[in-house]
Image 1: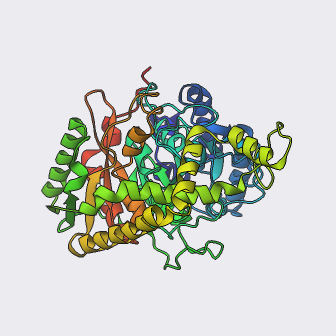
Image 2: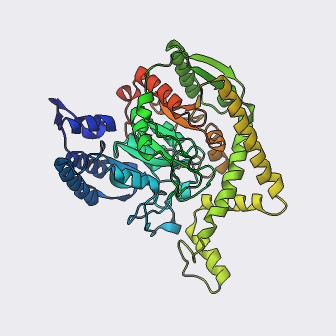
Image 3: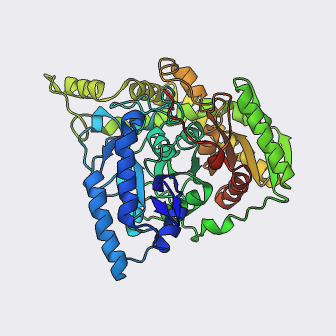
Length: 496
């Protein structure tokens, strides 16, 4: 398409660029929607990011919104912009499967609060995105339907559990997407796919309508092409919700106003424990270059010790699995979810429905969670993990008395090949080592690309802020992004 005298692929544009062109009447809502549905038809067979696509519905909605914008009935700034939604976020009248056989045919009777907010802005849902089953996994290989591929190299994983969301944004199948993050499930796939992933402070975005994995850790957040889009989408979805008892009543902030492109005097702490064993050399080199870039831009950088981070992974998996065991108890073949045809009594109905309906990773975590909550082990494991959680929060609070933000890798490695870790759960769990402590402490964290390795695979950098410190990490991420211009220099290759 020719825009402003130049040949332009609509799907390459960020949301704020799309909005500017809509405002100038250089493109129409219908043209944007068609560009994305055409792109999905072209690339989805390679990437397999979606569980459910909504081609005809999206195009019909685009026409209706276009008419109402023309008549002045709709005035919302981002009306008609398409979006993709992770398949554990409830959408009224559309399947919400959590990529599980257990919910394969579940059509939600209501919208999640974040989906209501998207509808208020008249955003167009292009479909539901693939994920690890019930958000349990770090590679999107644990989906009951298909494995999503990483657009940079189709033989590698896109990360997880929001792998469909990150891959769809990286492959330009959607301009932005919603994911959920329990222990890094927005940030790690964003790192693997070379996009921006923001995990907001716990309580900033309503969890009402998010199918629960671990209720004290789960958080919905944006996956976008750049930092400005992340700030825009956070503006749309953030806010108090009386339907979510963990939702915080905070004053509304315009997060785009904090993007100053200036980090002079910013105090950045580098926790040395995040740069230890198991970290790929090229990841470490890229992070060191990023640290140097911040220093050149006027930030003050200092290494320090956050030794409680060594216990975060074990703490996370005990708490997360315990809460998963409790939350997934409702899927029993009677109250909710898949029901087996093969049973002769009530006990068999329960056992066979859950055995057939859940995949191996979900079963593994339910068993582990039930064990740590059981009589005789509760004090030794679950109670101890909650005590360590308090220490993790305290040590982060002490760090933020001294530093404005913390800088770490998002993942110790780049995206790994499909099949290399799915049969080794412990190795897969270790991939979360840099991200889980943020969820344990309920803090905001953002992953942005900071470079590529020798094979051209993206490397992610994580910035962590204090509670409700989104403005600090968004500005620091934005300033770095403007300096290195990652999107201008690197694009997914769809290598096979």
